[in-house]
Length: 278
Image 1 (cartoon, rainbow, N blue to C red):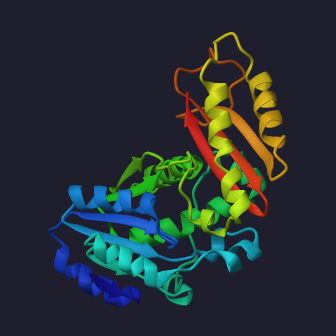
Image 2: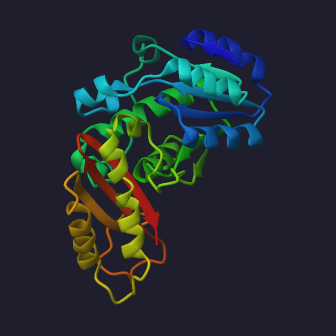
């Protein structure tokens, strides 16, 4: 695996692969089995696989979260080597954003709801860095986990609006044996929090199993919130039922055939997100 730390050096290297398909997996490091599944898929579907490790300050509305975000580059390199990743791109902030002001798109309101409501500016930061990576790498395919479902929708929107040729490949959520969605933030959970966090998935699964079209989403949301918040270590931030394609909130289960439950829960000081397709 080649480790590239500057934009210029990556561009020089990529000139050698003009006739190859390139798979790209953008990450913020602290890699886990969920990331590994994206990399394996990229390896299967492309000639060259590039993984970026960059903790993007622009997408953190909480600077304490940015400072405390786990950074485990030595372990990341070891995992990437074991997966036969071709290129690790590990840039510095000043280099990646040099002479680049950002990417302006019409979010069509998607940056103001759900995650956007509680993390102002977050999705602009996401779009800025993903578009920058796409500019530099021009990947054939880019791989994203479905855990960040709203982010995935916004990246697809950005790709369409900017007329990019990169295919956005959505990959299913990988979970721990406990059911907890894999996340780099899980590394920050204390032992007792790690024991209780899987209840998020257990509860949303339980309440989603027997939903009828005549049920009211607002009542189900209230029931889920009560069940989660009974646990002293868990505090629900939001729960929504939305259309998978438009992300619009639904007021009736009759409105859409493709419904997804999206949720954010605080587990102690760590904010966890998850989603479930009905």
